Structures are given as structure tokens and as C-alpha cells.
Image (cartoon, rainbow, N blue to C red; front, side):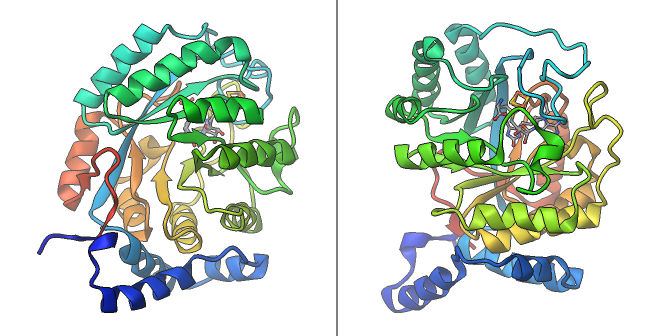
Amino acid sequence: MPAQTKQDKTPANGLEQNKAQAELIRHDWTQEQVQTLFALPFNDLLFQAHYIHRQFFNPNQVQLCRLLSIKTGGCPEDCGYCSQSAHAKTGLQASKLMSVDAVLETATKAKQEGATRYCMGAAWRNLKDRDMAALKEMIKGVRALGLESCATLGMLTQQQADELAEAGLDYYNHNIDTSKEFYDKIITTRTFQDRLDTLEAVRKSGMKICCGGIIGMGESVADRANMLRILANLPQHPDSVPINQLIAVAGTALENAPLPNPIEFVRCIAVARILMPRASVRLSAGREEMSDEMQALCFFAGANSIFVGDELLTKANPAQEKDKALLDQLGMTGLAAFEEPAIA
Ligand code: SAM
Ligand code: DTB
Ligand code: SF4
């Protein structure tokens, strides 16, 4: 039997289903409740997350996203994890904003290689109006290729967010990265509230929000719970939640951070899925350091989006053939661009 879409449900069945689903969408999580989820026996947590996952998604489908760094390095911010910060000693060569043609050429190739969502990242503290015209062309071009468009360009004013939305940008990525309490241990050149302000401008513009964070920066379980709780208690859940495992880059403040425990990482994916049932939860940076088994557990726990392609922004991602082999082995297939996720 083909998978049913959200609209296919018969009315009688559908009403009950919709009510049950609606009850799972909450914005009133307490810190204690989220920490209780983190403390569940692993099998109980995974069962709960997977059960919720199946009510909103086909668990065998995964969104395939592709990243491009359209402006690399030299960023004035001091984010302790980032290879592109001018405060880090990574030896990364800073570059200017790429041309529209070069971006669209790369996007065309990404589409041919199977990506359906295209994310353009710039190492900026905030977007400058002088770059807006080129960005609008990039967004329009990506959309014309039939790809979902996403950008991550630093802080935005309301006017800028509105203009990006008008140009057809589907998603804006702006991560809160960690808990409110831990934030200033990682970044000192902006505040947690700055992040929330840009997210609010994005929400008001009507664009979809892509917002998540990083696991493995020395944060506690309480910090992880706080980060996910803040995301879930936003006026609208982010449509997309990237969960990155820190790539400890030599020359950054976090170069010696140890890899997080894989079981604890899977717990973060499961809790994100339970707290934000409708969101695409992206198993984002750091997959190079994850075993196939760990990734399979993340998919079971509710991850349903990945970055494909050999490179993220500046660091490596698993080779495309390796990812294809993993997805084939798991019986998972890519979601089409703009496809409404189907229920199993
Ligand atoms: N400058 C923009 C900003 O900060 O929003 C956009 C680019 S920034 C590289 C986007 C996100 O990538 C960060 O918020 C962080 O979550 C993630 N990221 C950057 N470096 C990372 C690393 N070394 N390991 C894991 N995630 C990383
Ligand atoms: C996100 O949360 N992760 C992506 C995307 N949003 C922009 C970036 C990951 C960057 C990994 C390190 C690098 O390639 O420099
Ligand atoms: Fe700049 Fe973004 Fe890197 Fe922070 S994460 S240093 S804002 S590029």
C-alpha cells in the first residue's frame, strides 16, 4: 500500500488522528520535563521518539540537503567552534562573495547529484544591504532549478528578512547553538537575545525557520535540554532543526573538545523529535566521525534530513557513494523537493 499523505486520511479516522497529533505539538515544556526525557532508559526514549516520528513522517524517507559556502572565512564573530572566525588560527583563506553564476553552476551540479534543498552559507556577522541584490539573484536561480532554497547569512533586520522572503527564500538558518546559560562560554561577540531577535524577524517575514545547535562543546545534559526546550517553546516550532556534532577544528577554541558519547548524541536527536514532532530533524555536521550504526540509530530516533556532498562549508562530509550505500542498506530514499512528507 502506498504511504498516506497528511491529507489522505479518511475524515473519521482523520479527526482522531489530527487531535492526537495536535496534542503532541506543545510550546509549554518545562526544563524538568525535558531533563526527564533525557534520563529515560534508552529503549523507552527511542520507542517514544520513533512512535511520534511515525505519526508525522514516513521513517524511510530522508531529506537530502546540500551546502555551499558562498563567502568563506574572515568572520568578525568569535564563535569558539568555527573555522571561519577571524579570531581562530585555522589558516583558512578568506574569500569574497562568490558570483551568482558560480553559485548557480554549483547548485545545478548538486541537483544532478540528488540534492533537493540548497543551503548557501556566508561567514558574516550580519547581512549588508550592498550584497542583497546578488543574494536575491542566487535565491531566484536556486528556486528556478526546482530546489528548495535556504541561506545562513548572520543577523538580519526585519527589512532584510522581508526582502529575502519576497525573493523566494524558503528557509533561513540561524542556530541558537547551545543553551542560554552556556552561550557566553562559546561566543562573546553577540548575545543569545541577538539570535532570538533575528529568528523573530524571520518568523514575521513568513520564511521557514531552520534552527538548531551543536552537541559536543562541553555542555551539560541540562544545557542540551535547555537548548531544545527553548526551540520547542518558540511561538512556532522551527520547520527544520539541525543537530550538529562538533567538528573540533584545529586552531579554534574548541580544538581539543572530545567527541560526545554516541548514545548521548542519539538521545539529543530523540528528544528533539519528541519536542518538535513536525520538524525535519537534521543529522547535520559531524557524520564523518559517526559509524553507520550510530547514524541508523539517529534515523530510528527521528532524524530525517542530512547534508549530502563531500563538503559541508569548510570541512569534509561523508563521500556521496558512502551515503548512498548506507541509505540503500537501510532501505531509505530521498524526499523530493517541496514534497509533503508522507506518513508510513
Ligand atoms: N555566519 C552564519 C551564522 O553564524 O549564523 C552562518 C554560518 S555558521 C557556519 C552556521 C552554523 O554552522 C553554526 O551556527 C553552527 O551551528 C554550525 N557550525 C559551524 N562550525 C561548526 C563546527 N565546527 N562543528 C559543528 N557545527 C558547526
Ligand atoms: C548547520 O546547522 N550546520 C551547517 C549549516 N547549518 C550551515 C554548517 C555546518 C558547518 C560545519 C563546519 C564547516 O564545514 O565549516
Ligand atoms: Fe561567523 Fe557564523 Fe562562524 Fe560564527 S559561526 S564565526 S558567525 S561564520
